[in-house]
Image (tube, rainbow, N blue to C red; front, side):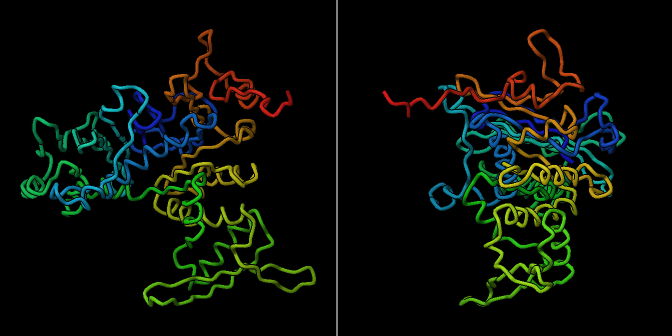
Amino acid sequence: MLVQFCFKNFKSFRDDTILDMSATKITEYSDRIIDVGNEKLLSVAAIYGANASGKSNVIEAFRFMVTYVLESFSYGGDTDDKKSKNKRIKHTPFLFDSTSKDSESTFEVYFMDSEEHGYRSYNYGFTLNQEGVVEEWLNSKAKSAREYKRVFYRSPEGTDLSGLPTKSRDNLLVALEKETLIVSLGAKLKITKLKTIRDWFYNNNFANFGNQYENVFLSSLIPDGFSDSKSVQDKVVSYFSSFDASIIGFNVEVLKGDDEDRKHIKIDAIHRTIDGGTATIPLEEESDGTLKMFALYPALQDTLENGGVLFVDELNACLHPLLVRRFLITFLNPTINTKNAQLVFTTHDSWQLSNNLLRRDEIWFTEKDKQGISTLYSLADFVDEDGVKVRKDESYEKNYLLGKYGAIPILKYFDMFKEE
């Protein structure tokens, strides 16, 4: 489970930023706290804020970290190899001051492994500049331990691999490039401790419905086994029936293209007609909301089955607030979410603030100042001008829309259309 994500100097976030999934000592909904190891954690974090305030950049920062961990073993090589050099993804620092745009960016996580691995905790992070990795560190501790122990530390002054098997150290040092992470390379070399870290990152899912290209890509994905398993199709029908009872089944046809190794899937949704018969509609002709829920299913299934983290940008887009609520309850209900999966999402749906659904420490805000610098803060930590924290009996939605918590747009009338 994700305990904490920290980053600095990434896109609109210039300064140290922390998304903390640890439960605070507030009293509401104490039954939903996940008590694992020595940690008390939350399963949901909802991020609110004005357009262009940095909401999406919080998720993009984590996504960048995941991508770099999973792929950096292939970065580097001969400096004259332009293909290899161009393959490396480069971070985008805060560009609106002369210092930050040339400074390093930092990404760090604290997370806890599963019960079968003894709820071991890890602290892993790295610092990058435009040339590659500047620092990288990994620390771990057992469930019963009080302090973290170093597994490795890398800096310009040298690399300490003392927490790794002796026979693995030389292989790492020989193959390590300045653009490559030790964790990424070590997992490729099948070093167990490092593969554990890499696998945790691999176990997370992303869905960005604010990106039209990714939206198209997500809508083309189908659940594992959907094309040839009636039981999988029945599960998807059951999933749809929770918000649209008109879909009672699917016709799935596997079409082979010119390349025999690539299969194309034709999906028709089966609807019951008013006279008791059935009618089929191509899935792509269903409503945007239905298509979005279909696109979410594979990531939702994988996250719940494997206990990872699902990051969704603009969860509320095309979905009714009651359906968004049902989606959140899937993660908040321990009888469904048996693997302690977590959901981090951005939204403009203020109704979720008014329905006694979220704890104050599950509600986060992003705000951008006049210099273009974004900040991230929790409702549980928010303090007003008089130094008073938010009470649990306040109307969160009303106060948010009134601007009491910040993180709302400063609006003007569209008077550019007014006739002179």
